[in-house]
Image (tube, rainbow, N blue to C red; front, side):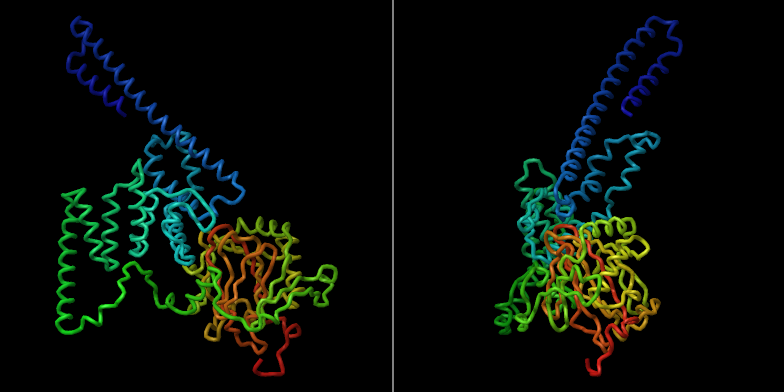
Length: 538
């Protein structure tokens, strides 16, 4: 472009000078100067192109080194939430800022077309936002320190540390959602990391601008004023900061005036010992509930209940008088007695798991939940995973696994739902829920025509490095994924009433991959397998 502009200027000068150079030696000599200028213009163009190509070469080498290192990692590189966030940012914000400007926007260029084609496999801005949401969810659930995360530390695991800009972008996305709690946390960390950076990755004034406003929205007016004064010291003519400072000063004056008035009225003692917690996590009514607090505690591995019948729990081999289990009985471990929750160890082989994952992967779609009002399936923020359904006809492995579930559970799986495969992504979770339909949910499972879900069979198809437990908040039970093991429990009493203590949740996956398969077994077909009791209350 620069070369073209230079040549156009030279052409215009030559046109105005003369169109018949051969008729004047003086004008003909002028052409030599034009030739010299063309040479300079071409050399300048080559120099700019070489700079661009050198940068592209460095970008290509960086991409190659990064991908090779990640693919060679023994564990899934992107299973670490910090790595995943930085990867999403790499191909969205960083791409648009650092990479895209170095490509010529020629849609017919073969390289351009190939890159555009491959970009369809790369993360989008929606993925970036989802990664940040997941990271903040993990931070809250597992009470992770912001500075430790920025340094690349998750418990005992270490990944690449974040720059001031990386932290800033997390805070900025939280700000866009009006989540000033996380905005303040991450902007403060960005500010601290900016101080230590030799090559600055984000302007300090920009971080101060966001942090001061977030502090004000959190109620910390004094902190907002201090930060705004620092911003104005760096940019004295920053109009918004000037207006904000005047506003904060007025707020503080009004606040002190009210405090003096209270003191004069003898009310000072009432507010004297009140805590001044500005950066507290905002919670809606449900997240303030005992159930949700217990759920998060269990996810962290904390003990929430004292189970007095623990000494009565047993481990045993069982064959249920079923021919399939005579040579290889199931390893049954009782976890809880009422409701009866058990774990069967080594019940699914590794080769079966790999087959199931291979069959399910191309069918994975965002998991849905039943809307109790409409009876329809829809996505929800409290369930973050992808799922697929597999039936007996898909592969002999599916048929064998379903038969084994029927044998071990002693229930009829002919009327059960197809095998559901779930893969939990970054921060994947499923908040507390029931597997069975309650009496007011009259439309649930109506289309299946097989009654309510009498029991749940949950197979863990991977170990999980951290997080991802199945927890029962009402009874304090927590089951951490163990590859090849399966959890089993009844959702209904023999009289058909729901067992409310089976309310459970899938904790967010902190580090690692989580694959599970569910088999929901229904009432129809169990008349002789699990008959009604003579006791009406059972």
